[in-house]
Structures are given as structure tokens and as C-alpha cells.
Image 1: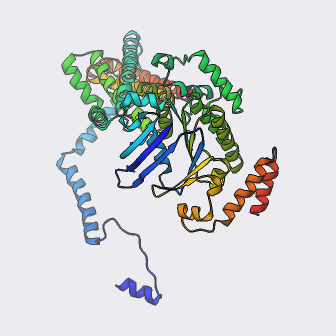
Image 2: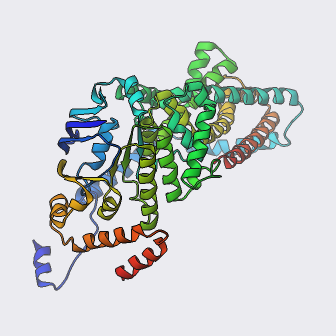
Image 3: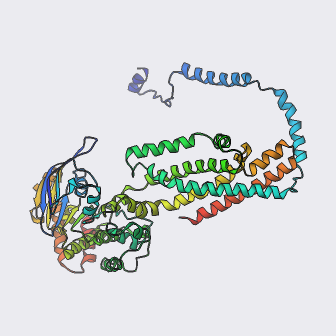
Length: 271
Length: 279
């Protein structure tokens, strides 16, 4: 009312940005509550500042014991590394294979609704848990070692690549699919003559990216016992062989760097 | 050849795209379908090869009721209908040759398709067509490297590779410049006549439709409101199809164009004329 009369007189036109919550009492009240909850959380989680104080000198001591890194047990190191790389390679390959049918079934523009919904549910479900949680599960089922690791990484790769593939196919211009259908091509021929040439470069790119990611993940899942260099790292920590731990960490860094460069290079070659 | 009987299409959104459309094409002629955007031109073309499923009515190709076919039989009938699109709809990452050969997909087995092992006769036919449409030497160029006019030539060739009994053409020139539009239309009509293939051509450019069509069908709000020859298209007819407008310039331009079309090699001259008239 006030605003409209002012508009009519034309003396003062007022404008302010529309707020998400217009009532200032509610708006500020909610902000205050949020801040209060964070403070309460810190208090209730019994974070002892004394421990932080104790921990700092221990960190310094640990670091001094880490230097210089000990590459003496390089055979163990190499073996763990190779196992990690093999895990990553096998898992990426399996993921690539499994992702093709799953990705195609997850593309809403190609398949009937029920198939689409089932495929998407599988993809979402397999993305629900973090790799570590899955790895713990598989270690419990299949025992320690690379098998659990490979299964974990395969699951992650499949869901990731198939999701990307499905979305890539859905983003295709419908015209090309329409045109190939209009020639009288059946579904399999549509896949190999239209979908595949259009989706292949990105599918390969995503797969290579996933290989790179799998190398990183393979070092992590080992920590819960799923094989690879991570398992060696966890063992060295628990035996206080910090100098060996540092050697492992440095090697992991080198490996991840190499993986990243390799993945970037391959993807730059794809168009 | 082609008989459309009381064809209707209602989209799930409730939009009525076609209402009781009936017509017959029984000679190898070029039929252009004109009408405003949303009149149902694209829907009509797509109902014939069931890229869009009609709601009711019949589509008869020779003695085959297209609507009654199962998926497999539909693929076989689609082989007999070549389709050409406004946005060309080539598979962009495939080469020109691969795009042409995709017109043979309905006849070649899966593994042969996968290995791109098309019968030698098809390859020969493809080279011939490339030559005919003025793209000889382009066989290994990727489709996404072509210009609009070149892409449409590939689009036309792909449809003709099917050796179709009917051409379905959806706005072949809407994405092209005026000169290329005329060239493409001329090529299309020539090829349709050479092969003795009837063609249904959606087009929103009345001038082009009149210049090149043997027969014109006017569609308005999903109904046929005109069916006749180019000469029969008058200001009154256009008003009925498109609504009230001053049609005098449209019609005069057509007459000029027709005069000039009879002169061979006058295209450059004509372009300058058109520009002068516009200015």
C-alpha cells in the first residue's frame, strides 16, 4: 500500500532485492539458530583442545622420523604398486564393459520407461556408498586381498561410466537417431551406426579418466585390506615404519601424477 | 501409391496436430505441403513413416496399412520411404560415405554394418550419387566438416540410397540461405523426377513451393484447406491457409522468379535483381 502510493506520487521509488524469506524475524532467527547449533555441536562432540596440543609435537616427531624416506624395501613397494595398477586396470576394463549395456538402458530416449527406471536405479544404488564402505563389505565377504579391491573399483567404475554414457546418449540431438530410424534400421544397427560413433570418443575419455581415478582409489581401498599399495601403507603405519611410509606416499604421488598426465594426454588425442 | 485416410494425431499434451487429413498421391509428383508453423506439417510427414504414431486413421502405402505393422515389418516399410530433414540429421562423426551408406542399413546385416562391409553395388551407387549431387571427392570428409548446403546434399543422397518408393521431405531449405535453398530444391525435384519417386515436401516458403511443386497442399490447424496446382494459389487461398495478410508482394515475387527460372545460367543476375527489389 505504502509503496503503491509512493509510486503514484512518483516522489520516491523504492526497490530492494526479493529475499528468500521475507520476514526479517524468521530470517535472522534461522541464521542465529544455525550458528548456535554449530557451537553446540563443537561442545557436545567433546573435542579436547588438550589433545590437539599434545598431538602437534607428536606430528613433528613423526615427520622427523619419516625423513629420510626409506626405499630399502623397494621390492615390497614395487609389488604393492604393481598390484594397485593391475587392480585399477582390471577394474576399469570390467567397468567399461559392464557400463555399455547399463548406460544404454539408462538412456531415456532409447529404451522403454521400465527398462530406463531399472537401469537408473541400479546406477544410483551402486553410487550410494563410498568406495571405502563397499571395500569393507567386500573384504568381509571375500577376505583380504586384491579380489575385494577389484570388485570395489569395478562397481564404482561401472556406475560412473554408465551414468556418463547414459547422459551423453540422452544429450544427443534427436534428429540423427530419427534419421537412422527412418532408413529402416533396427535397434542394434541404430546402436552401432549412430549412437556408437557419436558417443564413443566421450565414452573413451570418461573411461580413461576413470582409469586415472581408479589408480588413486586403489591406493585407498588397500587401507581397509583390499590389496594393493594401500595395504602395504597401512601395515607400515601400524608398525611405525614411518620412513617406509613416506617412501610409499612419495611413490603414490608419483604414480598419481603419471596417471593424470597419461589420462590428459590420451583424452587430448580423442575428439 | 500413397493414400492417407482420415489421419488424426493428438499429442499427449492435448495438442491436436492433425484432424481428419485425407489425400492420395498416385503419380510420381512433387507435392509440397505449405502452412504456418504448428499447422501439423512435420507431424503429417512423420505419421507416414511412424516416427510419430498417429492417433487414428490410415496410411496406405500400395496395399500395406502402415499403422497395422509390427516393429519388424515397420522397418521393412521404412526402407521404402526416404526421409530428408531440415537440420540434415547426418551422423556428424561419420564420413560422407558412411552417411550415404546408412541409407542401406535396412538391407545389410548387423555384422556387415559393424565392419562397414556394404555390397560393392551399394558403394558404386553411392559414388554415382555423390557425383550427381556435386560432392565427388567428399567421400572421406566427416559430416561435421560440411557446410549447410553440402550437408543437405548428403541428406538427399542418403534418402535416395534407399531407392525409395516415396520421399518424405521435412523443410529441406529452412536452414539454408535463399540461393542454396533454390539449388537444393531444384536438385531435389530433378532427382525425384529422374527416379520417378513421388515426394512429399514440407516447406514454409510459398515462393519456393510454387516454383517447384507439381501440386500444393495447404494445411491449417491440422486440416487440409487447399489442394491444387501452383497456379491456383491466389491471395484468397493464402489467406485461408495463413490468415489475413497483404499477399501481393509474395505473389508478385513468385511470378518474377518463375520468369527468371526459365532463363538458364541467370542465377547470378537473379540474385542481384532480388537484392535490388529488396532494397
